[in-house]
Image (tube, rainbow, N blue to C red; front, top):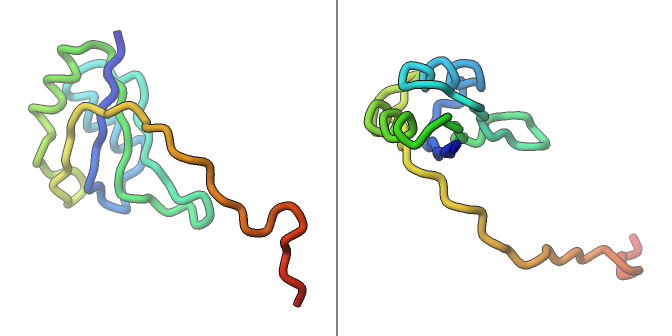
Length: 100
């Protein structure tokens, strides 16, 4: 079963490929994604790596937590499930648009 890891404090120069290359040293990587801002395309400084097995995920955490990747000591731990958030309030929906 795949195990998803959170990788924080990434350098803004870290790419999906460099993250994949680093974590491949710990085992089989299913996916590696650096999260980017949807408007600027710039890294948000964190990402997710999905390892093929629980054992490989544990090895990756031991290998990379508080270790240097692209000049930054990264934080690596098991990813938590995404929490439900209330819907965003849209101030300009439904005819409430200000007239300029």
